[in-house]
Amino acid sequence: MYAYDTITEAVADLKKRGYTHDFNISNNRLTSDKLDAHFGHDDFEIREVYRFEGPSDPADEAVVFAIEAPSGALGILVNGYGMYSDDKNTEFVKQLHERIRLKS
Image (cartoon, rainbow, N blue to C red):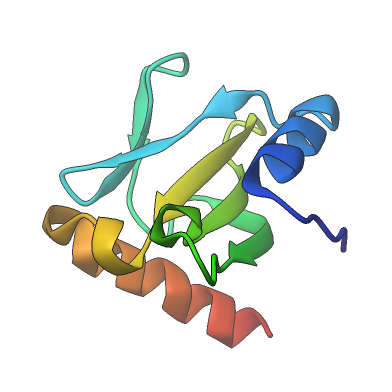
């Protein structure tokens, strides 16, 4: 596992390592415009996870997920939490975090 000081550093290094797709959460599904695909919470693999907590800046509170799609495509999901979390996708994010706990 790698160690990063910032979200920007994590994303840049993951992209260098082949995680080139940008994933988002929409309607409680993981989506990628480039892949023209969407996935349920059990339809992909979480390869790496990095949590960032900004003690002085709430905008720095986020989790970076390195994800592998069923096709083998690699990408990144950056999800903010705390005051910047998206209530519409709370259930999906909760399921992501449950999967992380089960892996540990």
